[in-house]
Length: 600
Image (spheres, rainbow, N blue to C red):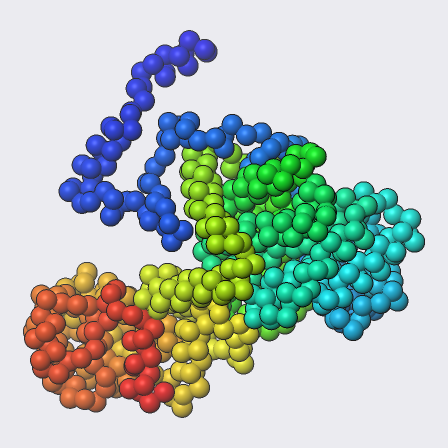
């Protein structure tokens, strides 16, 4: 058998990289390799169409081991188990407790309670945690940053009264004044003085963290992957400096910091992001000379983003959050929160929360994502992405440090301006259909109605398109767009499909057709169907004949649109034809213009 195997492999020569490139050049037939096949990512680096072993051999990441510094391959050596976390509004202790006990029987093993500031008391916490075994279940809390020290003391006293083993208490308090400052609440700077006291209260609980880096806020605001990571590192380092300068020993300080990070839709890059994050954070903490390498481990709670969620075709949000959850799980995070699919337009209900839980349970119980440590290790592509993301994020981190640190950058408005610029850029790309939102600016369900849904978060990428569609839905009459297909079969079908997708994104009713023998028959059929917009779909060569004839015969009885950008466009414009839709137009602005012409 071994001889047969040797013979088989000896008959095939492994092609070199140059041979692959030569073959690609032939297949491209003269097209530019860099423009056609090399992807320039928004994160600032290029991705090649293929990678080989020789590309990875020059990297350091494949030489790392699971559970060992710099932890690029994860904090664990024997499995990839993560906590399945769900957030609970704890305005009412009794109701929150009942909900917690219920979901603990449905697969949740990490609870996150959001407590109003006026409810922080010993009695409230006792009722909230009644029947919950805090040495078995991870418990996380958030409240007013000024009352977090008080909450920490109440929790420490509660754990002590229950006689819990301190090492078995796993959880956190979400104390992050800098996030408040990012949101414009400048008074939060005065809360930074509570950093050392809150750690002192919980210093005997090695697995309970109480200083948080909420880069999730940046993710939900539209930040690119390297932006979120670079700023998160600078954010965490700001807290390390603050704590050590306040006299907190570096090992203790590092072990008390937790990262709440977002998960965007870029599947492989998000896997690489979490690997790169651990590696870079370990290097940062190492500079503070902690007593052990275990202090260099990064603890990440990952939350699926709200930025790409939509109110129309909302069940597509399930597809988005599922791949995002997969990225975080394969990336080796500590815990995951799946944002329910309806969070963009309503308070999640029991059904959507159950589905969100099951999305993680599916990955654990059926896909066994929790059994393999760092499954992405050795993948040429993921190892390369890990290195590239780390390099770009590190550049951002160093630039922030050179300018005085993260707190100074926030106070100067630099971080806010940078993220706002990215958000504006992404909204423009979405408007131009250069960043796709499935079900919103690409392949919308134009028969769907909002049924009272109203967007809750206007920073989401889909918000501009949703506002446009909601305006259309409120109109007295749903506009009808009619495809006047004529001439070359291939071109008329392709352009009708493009135009249908393009116009349906505004909520128009679109009527496609197989084709008409004359433009007159096409226009008559459009008017009979009550068309407000007539889109002529043909080939570039045929537009010179068909477009003027159709425009003249229509005679202003409906808006006339040409699908494409033919060479005769200037001649058509000279005849009074002013509407053209094609891949280079700004879809959002064009649809807004059409709505205005239609009186919407």
